[in-house]
Image (tube, rainbow, N blue to C red; front, side, top):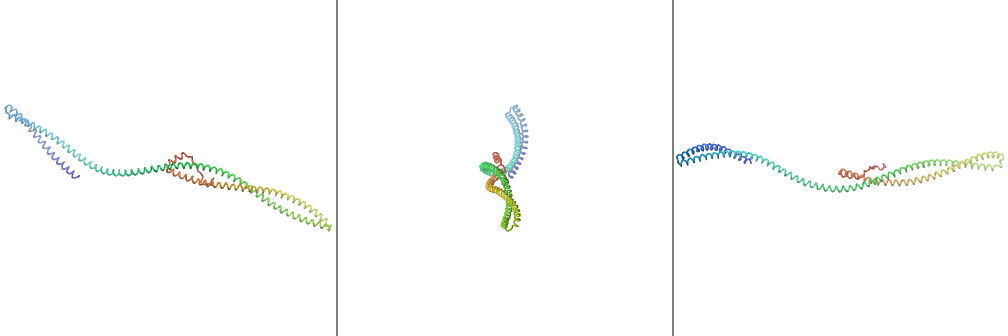
Length: 362
């Protein structure tokens, strides 16, 4: 490329030097032809006039030839003028050629740049083609995943509806459990009051039994003393015949003792009656206590059955609550992954009520 440009510059310099030479030569020839044409024209006119006057055909032909020679000189001068104009055109063409050569060099550099850009663009096009293939594969994978997620969302929507129905049933069960628990609490409070009354009656019964034991001991002592008195009275009757003097004393003593014994006997009978009444009261209280104990046993059986039912209900409730917690975790995960779908589904469902985590809170 550099050798070609050097040769082009050499050729341009040679053309320029030749152009200057021909330019000077053309100017000289134009001057010569103008002078010759002027002289030849004047000489031809003179020769023509002389030939006419002299009637010499040779002079006439020479005059005509000179006239033609002057015309030819004028024609040559015109031609040289045209040549000068053509030389100017040639100069313009050389200038345009130089300009075009500069543009050729510029376009060659631009072509190199464009070739490099074309290579780069081809590489980028190849990369973009690979990326396009990768993106198409990704789009296909996303379409498949979208279909799978759509099916999964439909299944989860059905599961959410089923679980929402189960939640309603669980809430109804919890409400029933709360009502039963309230009834059990009321029944337990009533049983506690009844047990307290029975404990009070039991204390009174123990006090009455203690008094009864004390009265029985006093009655035995009185009975023993009465038997002693009867023995003494029998002995006194046996000795009555032998001891007349003593008899009056014994009578007095006996009368005194009989009065005392009658008083004591009446007191003993009265105490026995009181003891009998207390026995009846104690028997009635004992019957009530036995009846109360039977009622307590029945209540204990009922409470145990209710407690077993509550335990079973709480166990089933714990299982259902664990299912509910898993469902909530699943819904939370779905809400993070697909918030729009879950928001749409939640708009069609009832509002969930928070259930206490500790069964003892019921």
